[in-house]
Amino acid sequence: MIIKKLRLNCYESRLLPKTTSATEYEFRFSVVDYSLVGKPKEKYETKHYIVKTGIGELLAKIWKLNRLEDIEKVLYEYSKLNVIEKLKRLTLKEREELEYLFAYKYQNFRPSKFDPSRIPEPGQRSFDIEIMIK
Image (cartoon, rainbow, N blue to C red; front, side, top):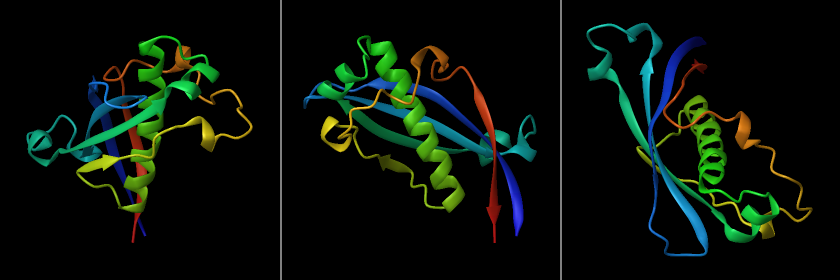
């Protein structure tokens, strides 16, 4: 097994037009081999991914996500964790639509595990991750 280090960055987030009772966002991520960061081939070797997800109005209220900025941060964190998991499994597709977050899936209605005050704005941080390749 080989351990490969990657640099992950969310460089854009976009609130999508309202078509359902969910608030939907689209996040654009870039991924590049860490050894290429700052090198001439970095831009050429960078791969781009689009991830779409959303949260239902009821769950947003239960989780006290009253501001769009807080919803965006929680959905960004949810998307980022899913992107990392899919990178590790080598299953990330160019366009992903993640399972939306709805109240009926959270029967005990616990508070959100994501604290928006501790999540950086999308696009403000890069993350270095390691994946194992067979």
